[in-house]
Image (tube, rainbow over the protein chains, first blue to last red):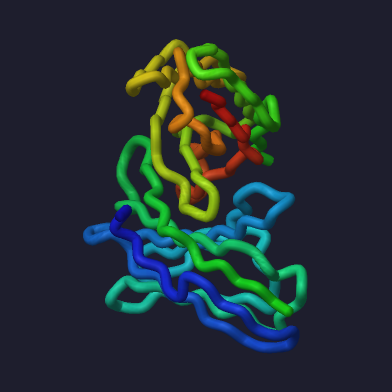
Length: 115
Length: 111
């Protein structure tokens, strides 16, 4: 158990629907990151939050949005789902800002299947 | 743009047959280079962080090394339980500490 909790583990839904993925970071970590992993692609960075504020944005579609709440948990909202959105979605957390490299700790992922 | 390229895409070894995985990178100022292990359907698991050229780190049968353009993950006398995808990622000095990943090397170690 990495300490990063993601729910749900599996989700099957239909095209055009909306889903919410939830992440609780490791205790003490202030930064949360969302990544998407498709079969034919590596881990693609979507978005990062630090202590409730958006800090960095990657290749995140306009149909996707995220937020980090005061208790530091984060939610990734995916709307108007398409078949191509089927993927593993990972949340990671780190302590945040300090000198030197920050190790990201990953959760077990949420597998989304869009039919 | 920060980029990471890993080779080979897949590697099949016999138990005990040592080999190396390659990670080439370009980054606008390296804060750290990371190696992760990922088992099928699971999240990446942290292995090593390397900070500067010439640095080496070891853990059991794994040894990671770093130059100014590449990192290598050496696997000595691998066992079947070392079978996994090995991911390399860079963290730049600029930006906000996200990791940019390569597509990984799928390693299969046969008994």
